[in-house]
Image 1 (cartoon, rainbow, N blue to C red):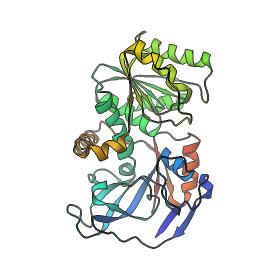
Image 2: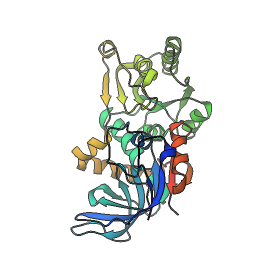
Image 3: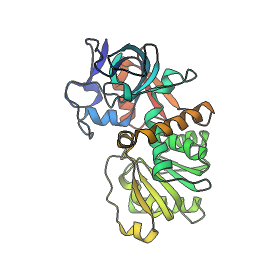
Image 4: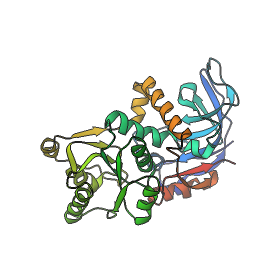
Length: 333
């Protein structure tokens, strides 16, 4: 089989594609014939040795795939050959075949294509857990989404609308804001790219307050970090919830904790991967709800571009340059 390999840490152009031996499933494992592999921001970090998980070299990046079970190992209880599954692997997904534990495979309906399936679980799982479990978003509340045209951001926009919130989308360009509006955002605005000055941060906060009638956002969904987090926190409503989702802009912000005191607000961490391991039954219920919403047409992954497996470096460079709207996906056929 062919696999994209990281043999030494570095930029996307350091990746190679090689023929490697087909993996064999062990106890409790299945082998998936991969049809599509989503490209996510952690894939950029993991090949540069900047991610919290550090697989031994060489390895394939790629944290989520969709494909067909083509071989079943001993002790597998629920899956069989021919089943269509989403695989949550962390890494190893940029390959034509992947061996994975049965528990990390999620069957998906026949009316979902492989590309959409590969782009579904991580973004919607993260955003659903954030808004439902961590923020306890209520109908009628105002949700501000930063990075609203990115993978998790756009999922948060759709889910916020499905949960009855008023959604404000913030992104770095007008066309990105428009993508978020096309997916249900009620309002939106453009923020500056790069490190914001103090004046730009104040204008950023003021714009949020303006769009919320001076009250501020009830929930802030922040996968961006950097100089965007503090001014967004300053523009939360009383008893608001500020969701720490990620740091796509690079720097991890230092937040003055007096803001949480003055606003009576919560700063809430979102780590969906740990949640899935610690609360598998709750996660299963959440995934069932997401699949229902997909069937009902309330949510649908926005895949802006697909790439051949051989073009993985180009896909990762586009992701690193923040050129992606929604999701991008590698296909193996």
